[in-house]
Image 1 (cartoon, rainbow, N blue to C red):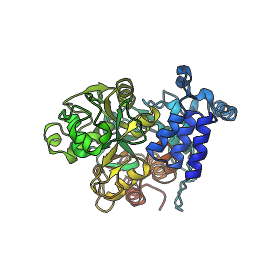
Image 2 (image 1 turned 90 degrees about the horizontal axis):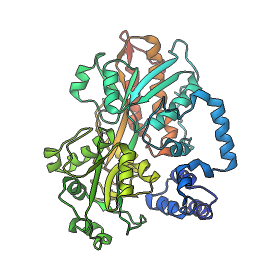
Image 3 (image 1 turned 45 degrees about the vertical axis):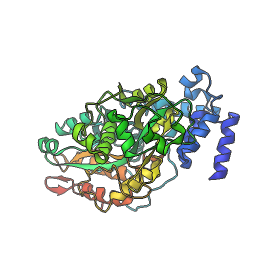
Length: 447
């Protein structure tokens, strides 16, 4: 790993790779946040011009540009990044660099291979924005495998829950599980939650005097204290206790939060509620809450933008947004007392920590997970499907697509900063998929 890092660093400082390419390869290598930050810093001269930064593809190698043009010509109207099909506040032009197979392969003998007689040719879904770019790649690939076209509209987790509840889509998407009342009000009966990816919500900050090689350390009490408005200065003794480098930072903390409802907010405040009694009693959990303090940003990109533009600010975003905007990413103390950097391995560890006790319906959250290596602000993103369906062709197509999402499709997760679903939970998800029925009979044509 060290030699690969050195090779990548050399390519960064010589300008042989663009910042986008360096970030892509660093993620594929599984490097730590400080290592990635150091690599990106080495690329500063490469992207120093504002115009170059606005057009990240402009410094690609000639070979890659040719490949991109050939792909666009081949896909035509089916372009992965067609905004009419997938909307996301993630910079898709930059994120596309990560949308590739990272070498992992599903080894099961129950793979989805080729079309299936009698299945529907089209599936329609809507919901969470967080996984929209991943779904864009997945569903493009799935059409190549099976011929089934999967249309996904990124309208937010609340919209996904509403759409599946009203039966206006074949499946929904959400980063926050449906509550009991929502399940009871769904027109088509019981809805299954199929976890297909996991992500980290990270505290991200902008303190000009500090580099990112030594990430700030946050405890449950300091994070909750900042967002409750109890900790207002960067050199507060509670922060300095774990971060001596803050002792000389005599500046007020500008708190940034989401202004819109989101699954990202749900995961973050779910964590704060789990670890802080005052937060649980006075603010609570939801896709949006009444924030005690701070300014709002619309979407992950909006929060990241506010943090970029405001010195001495702190916000929370999905991991990939912090990396794209080259922001500091904090370590968070877990149940075991260890300060953990967010990455795909520590998020998978969080889910694995709950594997033995997770509810079979898989609606459980995984914040504040047990385990020495678990990152505590982690969450699932789910695809939502009815237990009982009316149409055989849709049932065949949907169950096969869901099966593919928890098996073969997992190869693309890590490349964009999503974590793969651990095997123990994949096995439980498979059981739910096999329980989906049409006319009272299981419809999945596999095992």
